[in-house]
Length: 346
DNA sequence: CGCTCCGA
DNA sequence: TCGGAGCGG
Image (cartoon, rainbow, N blue to C red; front, side, top):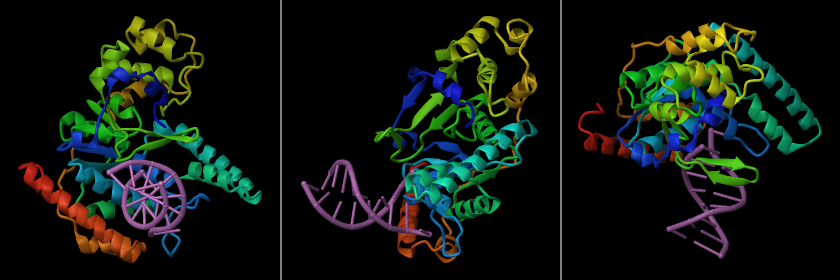
């Protein structure tokens, strides 16, 4: 979700498409929940059933996380996954709205199932995706066993990832959402996958990785600062005010910020009559200085092979042969990274 | 989503 | 060597 409208406003000139290998040697702070959601939504059977172990526990997220992480490391990328902590109070309305939307999807799914419409069931099933604590714990345990670092954010994962990128602990933040830019990441990496394909109508279109630099985005939008980008986003709608300002579309919002210079000025003039469900200046403060921690380490280790087998094969019924093959790729890729960059690993 | 297999 | 189909858990 995030700031979808902002994404539509960022033109192609501000985006640099590239090959995964061009990110070789970079530490990228990945929004773990964003990735897990994608896996849980897309790794499914045609009827919408996710992958599950023999005890009925969902494993789609582990499947996706395992193979994607290996691919990133093979490309020379050093991923550090950032997990969400406690959501900010400001997000409560959005979280409730999402829960309601899922509830509705669940009902539609049940209806489609009763009518025997398999494709419809699959469509709605993807909207009902949720990440339980145990799924997050599984993912963290797998990453630890793979030797890949992860960080527990105090609150929003994207804010923590942006903080790490701003400090230089990471080169950029990786997510599909644009919020990292608002939180101060100097670079946002999107579509971070080997063969990112997206269904457009009936066709599948290749979606290569892309980097959006904060400075490029500002230049393209003719804005002077991240603060102005935040102001723009608040007019368009964020997770903390999903509806934005009714009646103000992207072009008008951009014009308001360009001409009035700041949200504060606009609130005193053109937006004087607007009623806000939450204080927009509180939202601005959240983006400018969100909860984040410096208590983390970005350390890559040799994979603990036995532990990966325990989690994936013994605990969750993955095929031993496939996991073995994956671990071999991971091991090779890690040793290559070690010889090519003298510092980084270990 | 990503892997593997198989047919061209 | 490529790419679509089908499966993974």
